[in-house]
Length: 73
Image (cartoon, helix red, strand yellow):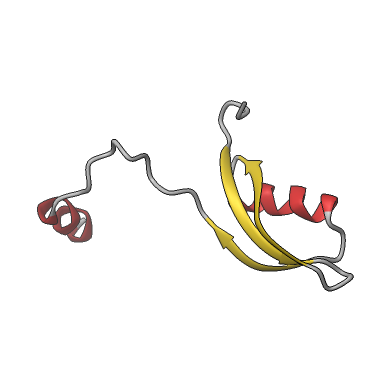
């Protein structure tokens, strides 16, 4: 169960012993919080990649006019 107000981030890391860990899912309110949690679990690890969550599947894609309106502001 996902804690309320958090998002799941997927990490790819290299542990301090050199082992590669892929698709490590960490919950956080933002990427910085998820990274802090990760570094507490895997001290001295190196983050190779962080994949932010994908937008919900049911969310409509913005139209060209919506994007132009945002840029015009």
